Structure formats: structure tokens, C-alpha cells
Image (cartoon, rainbow, N blue to C red):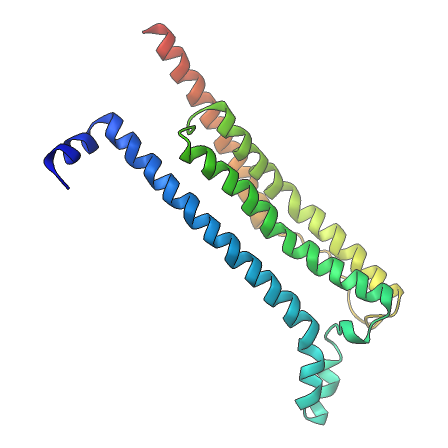
Length: 196
């Protein structure tokens, strides 16, 4: 790096360029992460369909009773299979939706729109999504498990779970609060620019 480049990096304009370059690199990295997310989802669906029958094949007789407690889509009715795969797709969709919102925000950052109201929309969307998702997830999971139990695709003695992930909801509330603080900071900055 030459002295001129170092000097340019120390100016506000140069540090802004460096910041944009970092966001552009992060944007490229996120495209690779999309590929990894697709591979992970494919492996997850493949494993979910093959795990229980493969375990039955090599299991000793005393372990077979324990393995019957796992959901086995191969032994379910057509309705049960649709419900089971819908539940799995719903659970995986969280990562795709959150990643989509995050990637859209990073792309805006990479184009130079960092501390603007347009960026706050992405932060608000992500915060709202993370706040609401655990409650929707618990309701959908409970409903699909109850439907699987009603169709006798899972044992009747299985407990129905209504677990809410409050950590994710708290993270969403934090992002909404951060959005409000950033909105206030942008307003103050705009007022200062008008004053000058």
C-alpha cells in the first residue's frame, strides 16, 4: 500500500470507501452462504427421510422400541407425510427468510445506503420477523403435531409441545429498539446539517 493510499484511507472519504469495500466483500460472502444454506437444507431433508428406516435396519432388538418413538415418514399415511414434510419445510423456512432480509440489508449497505431511512426498513423487517416468528412457529408446530396425532401417524402418548423461543423474540425486540435509536440519530444528523 502506497503512502497516498494510506493517506486516502485516513480521510473520511477514504474510510467511507473502505467501509463500502468491506460491505461488498460481505455481500459476495453471503452469496456463498446461500449456496451453503441450500446444501444444508437438502442434506437435512435427505437425512429426515432416511434416518429412521436406516436405524431400524441395523438396530439390536432392545433399541427398536426406542426408535419407534422417532417420527418415521416412511411409515406414515399420505396425509401424515404431507404434514410431516410441511412441518420440516416450515422449520427450515425461518433460516431462508431471515437470511433474505439480512442479505437485502447488506446489499443496501454495499451500495452506500447505510445511515438512511431506507436501511431502517430492513432492520425493522428483521426485528419484526424475529419477534413474531417464535409464536407463529409454536402455533404451527403444535397444530401440525396435533394433526399428525389425529391421523395416528405419531403415537398417541407423544406429548404435544408448545415451546416458544423467547431468546429469538428478545433479539427481535432488541433490533426494533436499535432501529428506533438509529432513526432518532438520523433525524438529529439531518437537523444538524440543516442548521449548518
